[in-house]
Image (cartoon, rainbow, N blue to C red; front, side, top):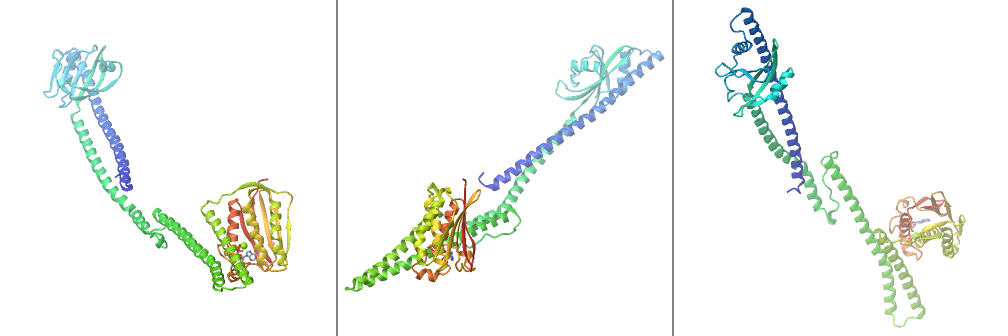
Length: 486
Ligand SMILES: Nc1ncnc2c1ncn2[C@@H]1O[C@H](COP(=O)(O)OP(=O)(O)OP(=O)(O)O)[C@@H](O)[C@H]1O
Ligand SMILES: [Mg+2]
């Protein structure tokens, strides 16, 4: 169940909400509790002060009038009588912490020290009384023997050298009831809010994830057979719309690469079919004639030889490209003199150029040491040179140059032929592309259109690039740029 994003989202959402609600409830409750306590304390302090004043007044009045009630303790008893609270209890202690008198709220009676403390009075600790004697006032919470909590405010009062501690106590029953109600209310509210959050969160998560589910269902139905299908994009700007667009772009790329592969396969079989057909034709003609002159047989065998050479070249090129595509064509990296390698390539194509009445020139610096795959670089350069010889036409001039820059090497091959038609230029690096397919197919000199794609791959495998620099009626220039670290 936890594997569902919907459930996880809901749980996270509800969890965070529950935590926030708990924090809110606890802090609010604490605040209310403090307020209640502060309100109670203020009221109790006022009562204690009024009681103190009444007591002092009572004592002086009786003493001045010479009435029989003249002792301080009697004045206390008299004062207590004047304070009739149904829920507050006055308790008076003397200097040495002994109980002098207290009021008994239910009966509004005053009890003097001779009587023991009643069960319903809070048991005030001696340390609390001590703290009042030295401070101005003190507040505390004390329980009765029966366990009922009272809030107590104590002050001290001095009359003619005698110190008394006056304490006013009030049961916290009502406040406790109120706080309990608040607690219950918060508990109930919390549970209801959590329930609503779980339910609402689940609905919300389900609604927001519905497009993802729809997307995944559509995506599951897309296969090689219907790669042209796309995911619906409801809102291009939101995250899910962007996800769908990204997915669609991926499908576009996949479709393109499948298309490329398909075309590649079709082109490859088409290219192989022609030499195979020629070989078969020659062979069946040779076999059908029992008595065939040796010269004709040799001619047929010559054709078979040429076509099989062409086939094996195509197969080798295809094999190289297939391995390159799969990232499995290893580079055999060695250190060699690039200037010498280029000179070597030039020597290999010299005869070809001479046959076409072309001149070859080579411009290069001394000793350029290079680290790379010698065989592949040779293949690259030979293809550029043979292209220039093949396609520029007779009596042309072909120049190869090697230029050394601080971080790069540039090998350029230039001819002054009639150039590649403008419409064909963007396609020359595509597999099996030839500007003049008909010529290439029928002419034994013609290639298969794999040379430049292979050359470009070789340049890129060395961290460089191969570009068609220019091609117009004045000629064509190809440049290979390779990273170079002397
Ligand atoms: N220097 C050039 N001048 C004119 N056209 C060129 C030149 N180089 C390449 N081309 C054109 O680009 C096409 C693709 O070249 P590429 O080397 O890939 O294939 P190819 O030479 O036909 O066959 P392959 O190299 O496999 O034997 C050529 O068929 C040709 O039409
Ligand atoms: Mg070529």
